[in-house]
Amino acid sequence: MKFQKAFPRKKRTLSQIKSVDHPGVSIFVCYYDAIQTALTEASKTVRNIDSVFVKDIKAHVKSNKVTSYGVICKISFRLD
Image (cartoon, rainbow, N blue to C red; front, side, top):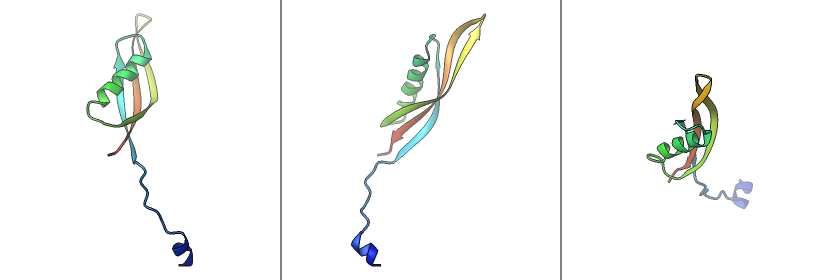
């Protein structure tokens, strides 16, 4: 009891961070565009986006040429 009185707990005011997985596909030959597509789509329904973690990158191939890229992103955002 003496310890708790000497060091009372302070109320934390840190923001909570949540994340969602979101796919992105690019018809351009650039993984950056696929990431931007996923971010643009997620931002339509999610506010306060903090960061994007690319979990997986996939290149779609047709006739021995890359035709598009796909990504799976984990998008982190702060709760209000």
